[in-house]
Length: 384
Ligand code: NAD
Ligand code: GLY
Image 1 (cartoon, rainbow, N blue to C red):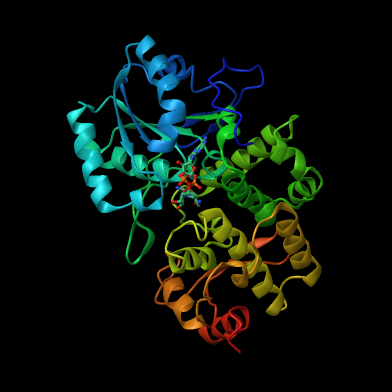
Image 2: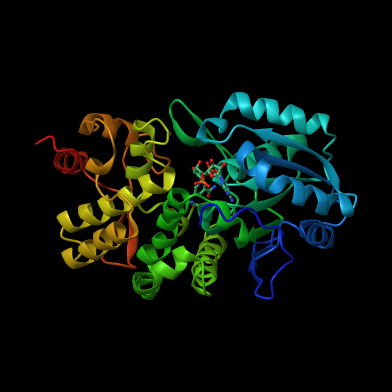
């Protein structure tokens, strides 16, 4: 994956389009190769009259800003760009404030669009800025990490972090168009690709056991990118996410909460590790998903063989599965519990967890006794 260099080829024949159907807010997701270099054409056709300001990070700017800019300029659509520092720290109030002012200075008007070119950090930050700028302007997501292509660019969740926790400030603001150019994955590091793969696995684990079995057989081709498997894995993941978003756009009925499989544990671990290279978001989710399976087994809800399969697959692809896999000092159960209490699913002070009855059978448990979690975390943190 690394070192092949950025590509800005013409769109391949294999571009697929998935429609997210929502009342008054439907939008297409194009998945294929060469979509960055032809974005101007697609935007002109889908968002007539919209001029575009591009938000990206310094890493992605070096690779993909020039071909995107060229494509927008060819149609007279380019307003300017705003480049922020790479990393989770950019999902913050100070960066959001500076970015919002930059977008206003660039002259973004109501009918214009913000383009989020990058991974989930840029998608969440630029998505949030677009939702509050002039009380809401249009948004185009051009996700360039595997995680962003299969998860964060779809569904309209935007946000930033605060010292209290992750994504606690944000909005629902659906994009008007998503262009997932899978050629951009050729420049992603192995580690970032692997972290994004945790979210691909998630769709199998939460509701599609045959997809998980398929991943067990084909993960090597998904990683290598040779052959059609990578596109199939992304396509299947995006279809799963689109269907869940259509069923429960604002996470009210419970369907969308299933997308948080592994996230209550994962977000707490990520916060503990300081949102740093010590533990990437997708790696935290990998551990979190395995903990959700472990916890479900401990409650007699899930067959131990299913948990063993999940752990085996995580090990095969090189993802962490245990708290002990995080480099450095392990958190205490008390530290993790305090961080888990910031979860957005907490209601009336009660923690809710996404648990499983087996692979592909996730459900939301809204009444998890605190003592049970404490005992479980003591064991997992090696504190008993
Ligand atoms: P990221 O955006 O930080 O990207 C990871 C790294 O890869 C960065 O250093 C970036 O500069 C670099 N990069 C991006 N594309 C590249 C490319 N094509 N080639 C080379 N380098 C590239 O991280 P991420 O994993 O994409 O996203 C994580 C974020 O997504 C978290 O903040 C998480 O909360 C959020 N998220 C949001 C949702 C949602 O529904 N809104 C869902 C899942 C995750
Ligand atoms: N990634 C969780 C969601 O979109 O709901």
